[in-house]
Length: 477
Ligand code: GLU
Image 1: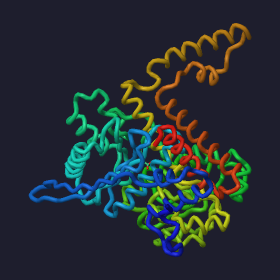
Image 2: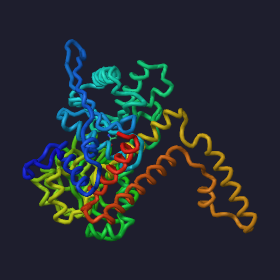
Image 3: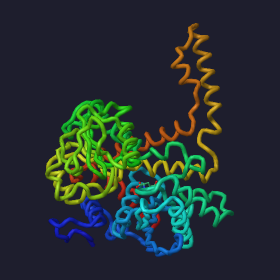
Image 4: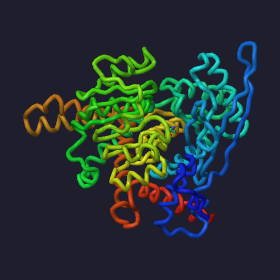
């Protein structure tokens, strides 16, 4: 049964329908046993919770969800979002994307997602802590948080502070679990977190784009050439993902951030914006309006349609839709957000020849480093702890041998690299880089070798579905 194929294509679909239609496009190119596609596509369960919290002299009832999309591997994994627009359809769509994302980057998790319908800006820190701790208890009661069953992480509106509260609440409930801290990822480093998790999604966007630019045919298909150096980028959203992606791409790859779109409008500068300075300005002024030496436009969304080499939507879902897709000029879109391009817009853009690096691959850096954090928690040892000094001693031996054999000093920069063992951050970066490179190559191999696979998104879905299908077939389900 096709869930969404009979829907009116001219009407904008809901987020979940949109993800399902993208899934169906991949299924149409495959040969799965009858019924297996439906088994993979459907959301296994979605729990809605209502719980009251006493805030000062009154009570407030909150609504939250935890959707479990696919349990072909346990634990299931996915963030918890705090947003006043959160709803069940969105949570289910995001949970589905988590399933495909984990399969694409080949990390052993099923897909899940949670949300709390709340505007976090309306509450002070103490209130947020109380609400988060209560939400955790409600989830824990139902095994919707558990190191071997369901492991949340940060998402829009949440960060390491909330993950710290969640971890502490869970461990207070179950102190007998030796790896209880593995119940959630994205925790502060000093509270069982891992180096490099905060910036991981943005880093993943950088590594993914670097890999894309290593393939000149792919770059040419996007009507671009050369490397990231000097490429003009429009970025929407300077939250955790957008900020880190923009910062790394401009500071380390020489790309030019020509426009930043934020809640209150957009700022542009043809010379490139200083991402760090803009971020600081946004923190102090709650918006980009008035940022010196940049052009301000109150209608930020209009700037999605401006000329640039790469458009990076790093905020909300559905921002590129039927209403603006025909007007998008960027030849390359890197989806740092989840679901920024609707199904209808995706069709329009493909017709136009726009190349899209899809969300389930592009923003997988976060969950990849979450995986490292979870493994670290289960093992209760930091990465690099045992081997670092050993590596350094071996490096020193090589330097000594070279100097003796060649009778000349090894240059200082080479010596430093040889005698420095990898620490946790080095290893996290290496693992993330490897993951993003491998996954991109697998996606492009499918795209290049199968005629019916029309774009990178479909190829990414095919990659994910094949992996999940194999698992189900071996399980005998
Ligand atoms: N919320 C992030 C995402 O959408 C991270 C999920 C995780 O680390 O589990 O991918």
